[in-house]
Length: 80
View (tube, rainbow, N blue to C red):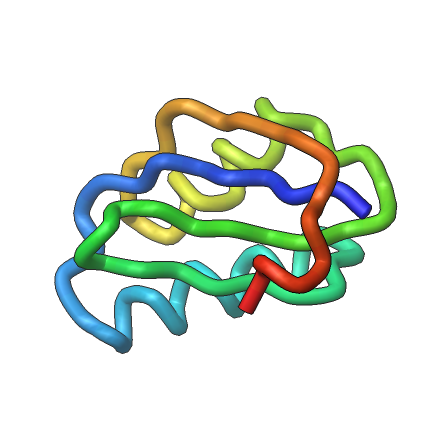
């Protein structure tokens, strides 16, 4: 499993988080996704590699600004 974290600017509330989560779910085969407007990030859990540039483009298309993408092996108990 991979844990991918994207820094996202512009989310102001729970509806913003849901908007980003829905876009990510539609575009990629993710197991889980969560966004936090207070942390300014979206974290997803997936079994497949995801192209960081495409991920940024999908989030940017929602009207928010995705920036840095980091990836690491997921610690299953830590996620959610």
